[in-house]
Image (tube, rainbow, N blue to C red; front, side, top):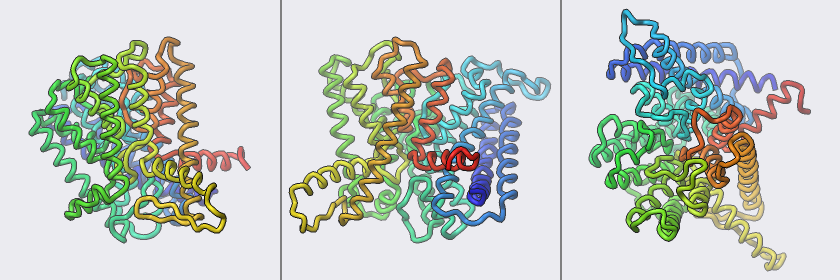
Length: 515
């Protein structure tokens, strides 16, 4: 295990070293908005992250290349480390505004209550991990009261986290070979666009940048101001959901803008290899690729069902309102984007009925396409479980001599391959539900007893599926235990559980607590 942790230490150091660049890249944003007091905070944050990265990468420079186990350990450790260190800019800016250490040099405004929330290090870590995991649950009570630099940092963490910090590292370091492939696969990705893994991740970033710029143009055309268009494009295509307003997209109160956001959330739900083929003009992949086809089917069926519930329950007065709110919230939840246009609940006060709330929970659970920016179980696993169960049941009625194959999309699996696929999907689904139950138990045990159960389920599902929609529970007043379990839910949700469990087992072995 010592060799494994040396390899993990080196690769985590390299990742943190690359992520430190984000703080330095953010300095022009502070200058542009004349928030000069934020510059020392960004420089200090970048230097701390750079120092940690250099220390680890140099200390373990001679460690061997990672195998699959190392890759999982690295992924889990890196995401946790980046989540903690990524809270530094928010913490230091909040304290800079409070202490005002440069009164004779830079004029700093008085901190708002929302900014003051981030004087608490736990709130900063929560916001950072929520950003990097592209979750979008927030400790900010009024996002419009944050400084522009803080708004940018939140959006920037989601934009980078949407593709993944490991994918970013591989793209920049350009280290060919099995080591890069192992790290790429450890971030819950398997499909390559090009034979070379470095070419693949660079192609992903090109696609991602084009989609982001297209989203900015679309939002500007729909009537958003430039700052809102940039931030919402970054957090929309990453299916993250941080907003610069407390009421998210609902702040605009403009149906045209709401409808403009929907295709951006859908684009973030489609796998990057499919985007690559679409850019090459191979439009048929919209319906021939099984995941992409089911993205549109599931989004359509779920939106219509939610619209029907909202209208028949009298939640909204008109069919148009029920359609617009139902479409937006279901696509937002299932794409894990986390934008909102209407209140779903207020913890104890019922706004949406239980059936509408739980339908969105089902969408958050399934997620969309693997290989995209979304969380959740992923549609391919759900399809595998459903078709696999049907295939197993049909096998009971088949003769022993029958040669049976399980067809999933364009793949035709024999008995051994089908069993392996079903086992992997079933294990992830079971563990997913167990950690959801853990999060729900802690939440119900620590919150007031009058919290509605369906809203508690909604909140935990939103955290673990990295969605960000809230039923009015998440906020700075949450008990510490609830914040900590949500950190766990977001962490394992982004990494799909297995790497985190591997890391915890490795740590226990290292400490002599596990044989």
